[in-house]
Length: 183
Image 1 (cartoon, rainbow, N blue to C red):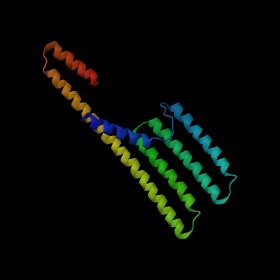
Image 2: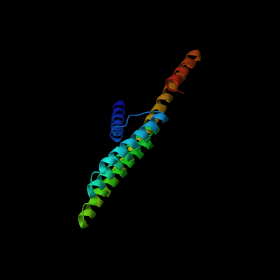
Image 3: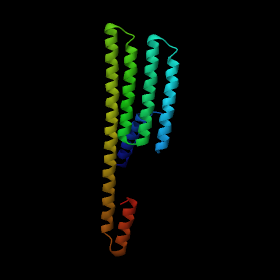
Image 4: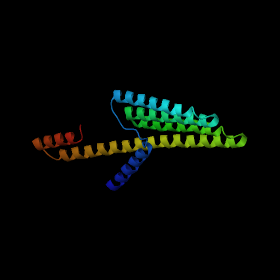
């Protein structure tokens, strides 16, 4: 049974790592969040200025990429600030949104049927990314539910063992179990 739980934990951790490989440095305070958002904006302005030397479609793609990078970094910052499974999922969906906008801009270089195919492919890739993000969240939630149930079962089992004892020994056992399980 423990081997099975280890596999579930490893799988879920792997999914969590895959879904959070955003490069953001985790932080926990609002001043850090604000500083990070200011840095993101400065990087966007610098990237946007680099696009000014380009012309036509190349400039459009450059601008779309700069905006997408800003959106991804903002999503990373918000995810790190909130540090919840929902925030991680929302960050992944923001990534998908950003990539979709870049893909749409790139598709503008094509005409007719080629453009339609390009846009359809971009939309399908977007839908796939969103589906994976939502599935990862469900896996994380199911994993956490399973861990909670196992912990509760372990707690109840430990309390049952205390019930076999008497007097001060029983009280000490119950106290130890409650401390062990933070109850």
